[in-house]
Amino acid sequence: MTTKTQRMQLPGLKGLRVAITAGAGGIGLAIARELKWQGARLAICDVDASALERASKELGAEVARLADVSNVAQVADFFAEIETTMGGLDSLVNNAGIAGPTGGVEDIAPDDWAHCIDVCLTGQFLCAHYAVPMLKDAGGGSIVSMSSAAGRFGYAFRTPYAAAKWGVIGLTQSLAKELGPANIRVNAILPGIIEGPRIEGVIADRAKQTGVSPNEMKEDYINRISLRRMTPPEDVADMVAFLISDAGRNLSGQSFPVDGNVEAL
Image 1: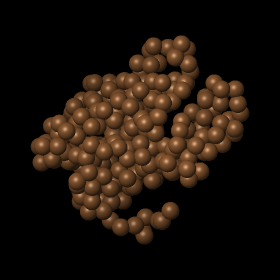
Image 2: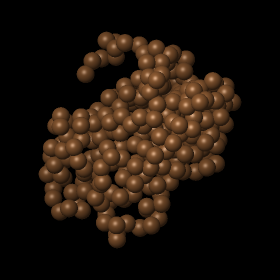
Image 3: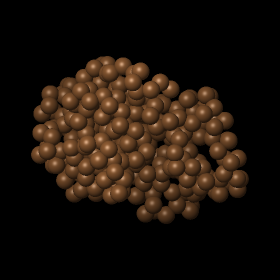
């Protein structure tokens, strides 16, 4: 992977006002770092107060707010602060999500199902609901939403997560048609097996569910990837930057896997 000093500056990102949900850790922080390097102005939210404080200091974010994307009032307050502080918005990165419960359909508690759908899918609707008026006022813009490789495969024992991520694809395609006349592009990214503590927890839970060791389960996951390696979060950040830049100005309604070609889940 090349270093940032060897990378080309993408057109149209300098000064762009970008909101990133769950921007204080994992993929969200990688996206925020890339866009900061590209010269964008950042607003981030997260549910982790200490991580949010660290990220805000590192990034110099103009808005950094505690917000759970499944909470209507907190989402409304986040976007109200963006409008007040930054004078509007040019791009939304709908990144927030949770792994959800692991278990058979008869074992998953209805409340756990609902919580996963609320964060991973309804949260994206809520953020779009409050962001779109600002994007229209700006004369257009871009929304990039995180789906998953689980958004194109069935995923046994993780049905809430897979259902939500399939829903993100439908939301993306619908909004692309609805908002295209307002010059708003809407795309989804489908990350695969992303390096980091979140996937390690998923692998451990899946191993327990299926009665194998975590190492065996990890090997099984990697063997389902054509390139036989996990994807670093920075690779997802690169795709986000491309999509919201002028280089991606004619891309809308699309879903882009960034996963080394995951063949199955």
